[in-house]
Every structure is written in structure tokens, then in C-alpha cells.
Amino acid sequence: MVALEANCQLEAFSDGGQADVLAVNKDGFLIEAEVKVSLDDFRRDRNKIKHRHLKENDGRWPTRYFYFAVPYNIANKVSMLCDQLYPYAGVLGAKAEDEYGVVVYKEAKARSARKLSLLQVTRMAREQSATLCRLAKEVAELRAKR
Image (cartoon, one colour):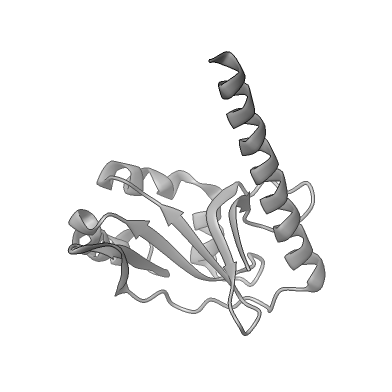
């Protein structure tokens, strides 16, 4: 299961912020990816509260693996900076010659997180549905303005 722009804590009424991409792997663990388009965008992310929780690795945050997804032209630089800024994070980047291929530039470290409960997976699906409905509404409003 994959969800875009979903609440990264998977809890009702939480203020943990949105994740660009959430996925559940075959073992039932949560993988989170944040899309960053520049080095400045990547550096600014450290101000988010989620990174304090991810760094503490106290088991209170549901993410097992955290990745940054970046353009191939900054992937190596981001990989080096990750060790300093986000030591738990991995880096995904596009292949230079293939706009659809993905390369793991740096593996994410497994965090102490539990397998997702059925309730958490349900919340993830609901968040995805809400995002899709909101986007569909925005598209319809833009078409109506034409």
C-alpha cells in the first residue's frame, strides 16, 4: 500500500505533519519518503518535529525506514550530508539516463518501530482517499474557471 500526502504519524488528531509518500512493506512496516528538489529544501527539512522523533529512535514514531527522494544531480551530495543531518535516513534518486529508474544512493537504517496495526493501515488509506478527493476538487474548480 502506498499513500501520498498522508499524516506521517497515522494517528487521529496528530500534529506530526504530512509525509510526501508513505508505503507499507510486505512485512507490515512503514516506509516514509520526503521529496526534496534542492539542497536548501533538503536542509530546511531538519526543522520539522518528525526529525527529532526519528533521530531519538524511541519507538514512538511509526516509521521504520525514512528516505529522501531527490533529483539525481544532488543525490550524491545529499547522501554525504545525510550522515551529518539525518543519520537514520536513506537517499533515493533517479537514474541519470532514465527518468523513471530509481537508485538507492544510501540505505536507510532500520528504526525501532512496530508493524502497523490494521487501524493505522486504515488511517493511511483514508488519508490517501482524502488527498485524492481534495486534488480532484481542485482540478474541477480550475476547469470550471476556464
